[in-house]
Image (cartoon, rainbow, N blue to C red):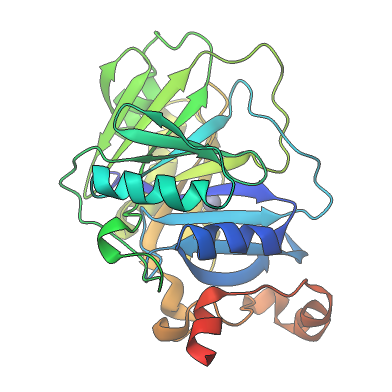
Length: 307
Ligand code: ZN
C-alpha cells in the first residue's frame, strides 16, 4: 500500500469573495469546483488547483462567514508550501505580491507571505522530479505558474521523537528530527515546528486538515491498516469528487486519506470547471435557495471568457 503525496489541503475562510480574489486572481490557481459544505450546505466549499484539479494541487476552503480570525497552535498545520520553477519565478512572485501591498519575506530558496486572513504561505524553488501541475492565467507566464504543493509544516511538541504512524504505517521517510518525506507518484514534505505558547484557535485563516493521496483500489484497506495501528479511522465517506477516510495523527493534526478518482469532471465539463454552483445529490433540492443566499463570487476565468 502506497501514498502518492498530498491530495488536498482544507482551510477556513470568513470571506469567500476575497478568498477567490486572492487564490484565483492573484495566485492564478484555477477555481475547479464551487460547491457547498456537504455537512452544512448553507455555505461554500471552494476548491482551487491546476487545470483539472489534480491531487497534489488541490487547496480547499470551507466558508464560515462569521468565523473569527483563528491562530495556529499545537496540533495544527501552520504553513503551506508550493513549488515554482526557478529563482526567476520567485522574483516574479515577489514583485506581483509586493505590488498588491503584500509583505514578502525572502528565505533560502523561497519566499514567504500571508493570505489576507493570515494563513502562512510559501513558494519554493527547490528542484523536484515531480511533473509541474499548473493552471493557466492570462497575466502569469506559464513558466512562473505555481506547480503544486511541496509540503506543509505543523506545530507539535517533542518533534524529535519519531512518529511511528508516519513511518511505520503511512510510508513516510524520516529525513531529520521532525522532518518527514513521502515518496510516491508525487513527493511531499511534512515537518513539525515547536508550538507557540498560545493555544491554537480554529478560525479564519487556519488549516482544517490535510488529505494524503491513496490509490483507489487500496482505499478501503487503509481503514484496517490504521485500526491495527491503534488509530480510529472514520468509515469511508463519499465526498462526490473522491472517497475519504479521516483520522487524527497522534500529535493532533487531522489527517484524511483521499482517492484520486473520480475527480472534478464527474459533474461538470472539464473546460468549465468551477464556473457553476455544483451540488451533490443529497443537496440538489436546495439549489434555488442557495443560489439566492450564497454571496456572488467573481471567477477570473469566467470574466476572461466573456470579454
Ligand atoms: Zn478533505
